[in-house]
Length: 102
Image (cartoon, rainbow, N blue to C red; front, side, top):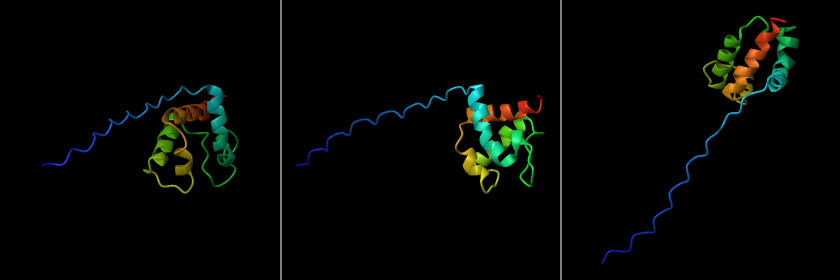
């Protein structure tokens, strides 16, 4: 005789969908303040850390995403960038770039 088959495992629940919420301008400005702690007020660096004020939103977003996925080496920026979603990166980049126009 064959032994009885083990009980069937219940089907795994589907992975929850992560819904990325839109980033408000106030939230983007607040998150950009983290950048200004090292890159200087409004992204104008007073020292050896690169300034952000002359970069476009696209430049900033591309660099942050490259830090986030490890394509661009860093000491600190990779850790910072990994903490943001792509919509947050886009919002932060747009906020910083908009300061150049004021």
